[in-house]
Amino acid sequence: MIKATPDLADTFKRQKYVVVRRCLPEDKLSLLYSYARRCARTDLDRHDSQVPGAYSAYADLFMEGLLLDLLPLAEQLASAKLFPTYSYFRVYQRGDALNKHTDRPSCEISSSICLGREAQGPWPIWIEGPEGISSIDLEPGDGLFYRGIECPHWREPLTEDLVAQVFLHYVDQNGPHAEWKFDKRTSLEGCKSEQ
Image (cartoon, rainbow, N blue to C red; front, side, top):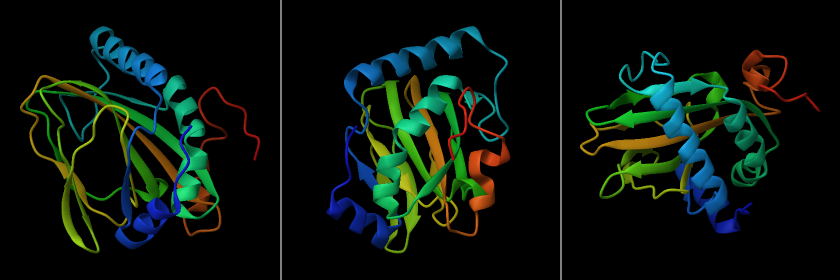
């Protein structure tokens, strides 16, 4: 897996978010994108209230594995020891949007990673940090790491066919939200706790 450079960690500290290009290797990215697409085609009843038309899945076994895989990178960026809380993935379709919001306490350090798309180009995610509002374009495999509780973020309606995203969430082991370790579950889905 990729390692954070000091420049990325400095940017994360200053802006409260940073983009990490190609944080997923191509073979893993291809597998996860195919998996997300298949889930969206075959399990039509899994939707959430935040984006009612989009397929979504909380604590999926494969995405929980990715949550653990990217924990060292998230820790390097946040300059802190972190507990994983949960993973979530969503497959957006034409017309889907994400209202401006901040996240709940289990999302102190978050990432939004583009798994893939059926679109001509990136679908921007908007984020508001201490230096103002930015539009972030993520290519497949790119991740936006951000302080989800502090930085409002949103997406305008999707004008293309499909975008698959995975969201990975963590909390500072020594911070005010540490009680949200594993999102208050006994362990991650399909994983035994070693901490």
